[in-house]
Image 1 (cartoon, rainbow, N blue to C red):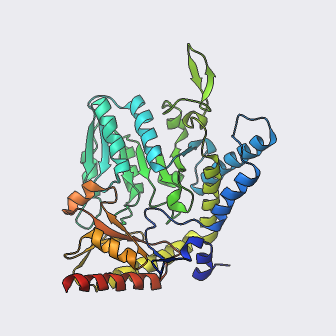
Image 2 (tube, rainbow, N blue to C red):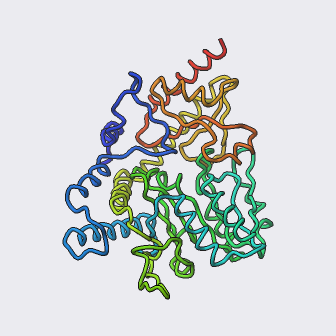
Image 3 (cartoon, helix red, strand yellow):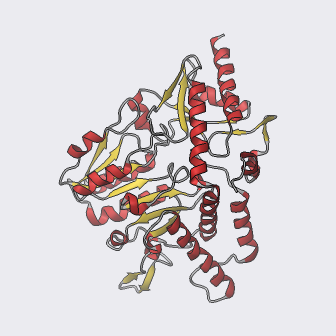
Length: 407
């Protein structure tokens, strides 16, 4: 039976508190989501019962922790419908995953004069690692532009891809505009010209069911902390045949087969990309978070978040001088906006005093801000545990601040 919103909110203890004497209205889910008790308790239980380093121990606790860790890998494999469990690489997060691909894939396949394509709406995490690769290899970074509505101009992609293009990296969903990109179409276009594709799913993974086989993505990355899991854990999915071709990103324990001073051979997938002591507790908690999401159900999540998005958009359009950035017809529950004559930081600071948590600034997307001729925005991002009453509080807060500045 589907839980009510009141029941769901009880799963998240942090929501039941006051900030500056006001009930917390948490609308910063795009930066990090809150954690359900199921995830919090999973970490606590591990530390109280089976905490031990994985893979290398022969004792009982190490065996139990190793089993829990590898079961978590299988859970995530099923969560995104990967073909093989060894295609799931545990990382520190999406940024770590992208850097892994930029280094390992780049070392193997990118040479002087080659090209990497990114989009104009990317998070810095999906720009800077490719810039660093291009600097190392004397390659060229090319950019797929966006429209004024915040949609990728897909018609320009065919001409942007050339025989020198080695990889295309694109976000599934913009962390600023909320735009849901047609990544399946992008992948198809790239594959027709034999170009592999990396998709940054950080803002998509918590809103809709991801099927990497259906998408046919070569790489898909996401962070745990944005999908109700702890910080410091994330996923790199890569097609097995590609992961087998590229070298390790880091060296150390757990990623080796045999080490001598003359030569080192590397472990099989997925371990050759998991150097050192993994965040095994975080991995298990990430799996628990995926199970929690599935217990809520993506159908319910989409319905609830779409209602919140539509409600908030309608309410904001009544606020004098308020402009929304990102008006694509296909959006997730993110709204970035500015109010005339009010700096984003001032708005965010004053909303905070009312107990309302939003994000202000460039949202790690400075090239996108430059595209719109602004320094930053205020961003409200909604989860299925948010309510229309909370949106009403946001709108009332915006109106109050607007009137204060006008007066």
